[in-house]
Length: 260
Image (cartoon, rainbow, N blue to C red; front, top):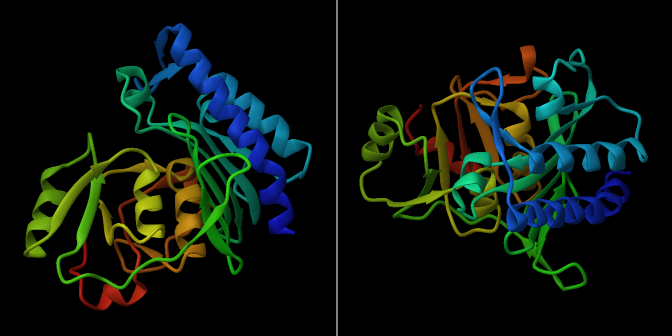
């Protein structure tokens, strides 16, 4: 069932990416939401496109970032969708390529299906729990299976462009020798899933639609993610609000890494 849903949603996710790039190319206005975060026409139109595509396939509740901001807030339930049609809006506005399209299906707190698209270059990462993950550069191109790697002696740590706070910096310093690589939006999870990075620490708050799709791809590729108390990271929390977390490519890495 998840394989069928994933395959059916790939064209819609790619269409959302095309729409976003069309808006970027011709120009757009930026507005502020009630939480002072920015929103654009691209965020809103892409979310409407993805919501319609999901609704045509499945009747589980859909929690979208922009719909949530507008007051459409379904109660938490066992099975639901999370949509962040344009994760990394600040990068999009600034002209940086580190933004993404994100769709995830959550079942009993676990993200079991995820799709992440980088609109600027067309790279798609997708996966479903127990069925594996892949990346695909072009719509009809070959699919490359994804597999995480063992924790490296000098770990590659991915961090946010705009959220390198003192707590994260101190945690990274505690590891000793590392290679630090900034990356945008949920693309950090994809770096772990494809085996080109090892660790993603996050102290600052996020929302569930920010993380679920990348988390699903990471799980499907063999990785793991835990909250600050060391528990498996779950979804369906109050108002869909996340605390800190530690995501890794190698689940055995939790035995060697300091707690957040």
